[in-house]
Image 1 (cartoon, rainbow, N blue to C red):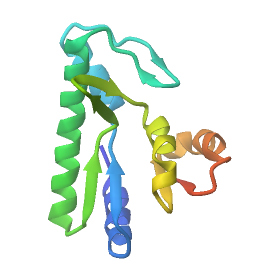
Image 2 (cartoon, rainbow, N blue to C red):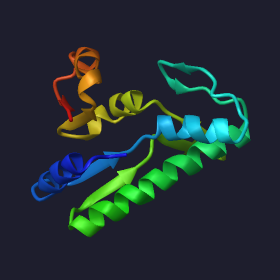
Image 3 (cartoon, rainbow, N blue to C red):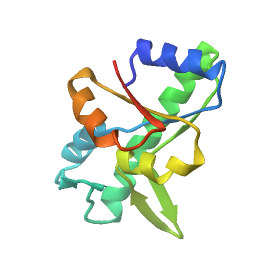
Length: 140
């Protein structure tokens, strides 16, 4: 989950800007699938491929737990941010979206977008987002 350093950075940012945080949970979803006896499945450039409704729901539930935890932690710190998950519901269909793809999908709606990643993924993420001037990649 998000480190205190990341949460403090979000709090500072939220003092000047309207902040939306998209929280993922790939590791926790993998653990939930394994615990439920479900295959972890393929993870391609568009995100996790799920085989059916039960897998989609379990992934969504895991993401929503992460969302609630981050909302609570930010609220306890006095940070003002909206926390979302990388999932779109169209009609009654749950559509999981890779977080990087979600950032690209909302690119035109925001003045600046930050992608926060681990230091070991930093260079790969910077290369991926290099063509997009409004996206800054930060490692923690």
